[in-house]
Length: 411
Image 1 (spheres, rainbow, N blue to C red):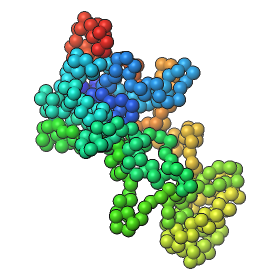
Image 2: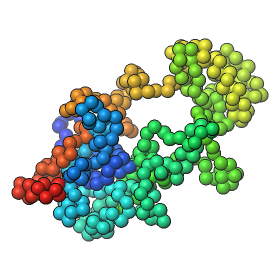
Image 3: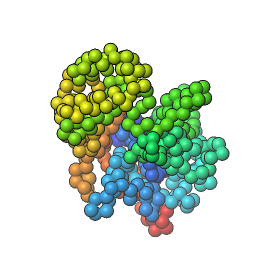
Image 4: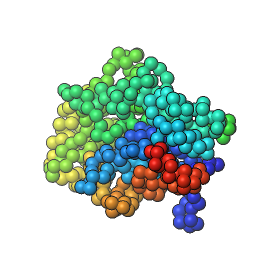
């Protein structure tokens, strides 16, 4: 087992974490790499986040701020991690990473390809001291190919992977989701690849590189887009709130001004919706009786449903739809999530105490495991909070060595 392991759990306090014997050195920054570390940390891996000693990860400054100028994003993205500082451009900082990697299971990074190699920290170099090390690399374009050296942010990967072109309304330029979708996808696939590599290591005894590119993580979600073009000459376009030929599945107004999603595009479900609307004959009307017919007559069908929903308040409408087995729901905002009984019952939101903010709510660990569930153990740390813990407790540096490194700006 890795020497970077979580301490023993108190008996009876909580079930063991599934990755409690796994350690990771996280030298990434911003989102695409660090979110991978966040996923593993939630499942019990000890994640040591290495940051620049000057200002740390830029995520410490990003996001909506409280009045005292602190990021509300950082406590979420860096939860369950330890923070140490090291100047990776200094040979002494590079040596600290080598020593940490010698006992780690995983090294996670999202620099441009070749950067670690220039610092003497590439996979081949690290395998000389730890052949079992998994090196997880998250970049815009991957480690190979003509675009590999380019700077790549999540938004560029979303455009190249295909999702930007088809997102938004048809009469407007491509839009974006209000979150860092490409970064999160690349990080999630990186976490999956890391787990697979750790599993493979049980048989081979050796580590390998996990190469997660943002554009490919987006491409992986693009359904049948490629064969549709290659074999049928069909190009998906922006279609706003609907999918072509899938109806009814849209957002509809209510009497009290809410917006309700109704998805009744399957034949049997549409028949139930038509009955609830008091218009059961719609299910036998040739314009709406089949999936293809409803898709061809989407606009007029949506208008019929909108007239019906606009005459009812949201709560009444949702009760009626749910009682009759028609998939429907509100378009949730954050404030809706805090008041929702299902969120509460499944503990989808947890609250931890933050030294500056007080009680801080954030999303819980997902997916849920019945025997060894993950958990949020602590929020994002202060910059270099664990320098002594890691460099002295783990690497055995003395007080004088630590002081010299700090005085020289190495940590």
